[in-house]
Image 1 (cartoon, rainbow, N blue to C red):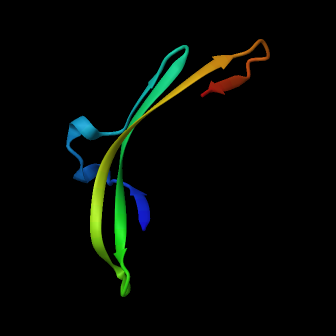
Image 2 (cartoon, one colour):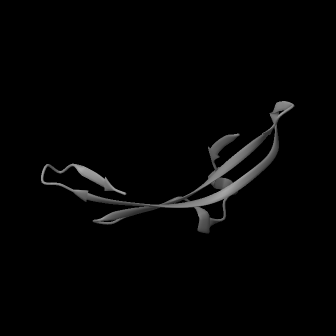
Length: 71
């Protein structure tokens, strides 16, 4: 299995990478291609899945201006 960023020229504009940075959290949206390789010939894809991912990262900034991620 190989995971790669989806080439932007193959994406509909609504799926282009996007980052929203706010004071207490950031939201990242992006697409990846998951290549399932042929077990008998690893130069050939058996299947390619395209996934859109959205991640939420909450954080605080302490008095020393260090960013601390929250679970």
